[in-house]
Length: 267
Image (cartoon, rainbow, N blue to C red):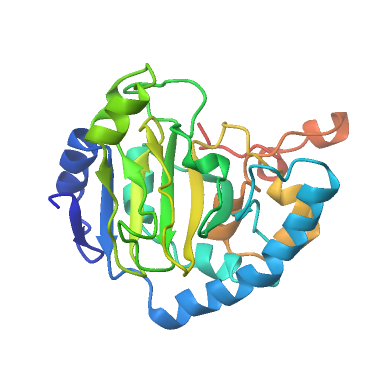
């Protein structure tokens, strides 16, 4: 596969070429096995919590194996974000500073039919050459054809219209990748999770990064706490959205520059 390279290859010319032609790239050997296993272990309890809420609120039917908003104080997520995986590529793609829009996971198991198996793109409006969002997937189990490796319709990030189902599944490539790999893809790209025909799990982290003025799916600074954010590194404050908040009242709005909720340089 021509769009599969090693994680150590940070050449932005290569990144530009592959993202323009295919709309997605696989970076191999990005995360060590120990960290991947730590992430997988944390998903057990996290899924129980979220599944209970899905069932309670009557929306469980097509959400099997989906976990949303895993950003929490005491799990792997802050350590993961602190490591700044593919930060140069993401910043280059979005031409400057960026924030986390969402961070979730998918546990794909046999006979499950979650909504992520539908043909979709991860941004509602087609943005063409103006890049607003980029997606990242962390491969937590080997992705194979048999266990549901994701379908990507290479080049479809350049078209607005949703492809016809027959055409999509006939022409889409499969993201066959090793555990610990990272997939970056243009949010305009049409894709779909595959069906798992094995007895094992096929797990992945799924996340989106955007320009700072793009609204987050969950208000992570408010969720984690404004006081908690004061103890975070500048890199974490930026990516979690602490520098791109919306004031709640006039007192929060009328502040000197260094104390404003929406900081300079956020676009």
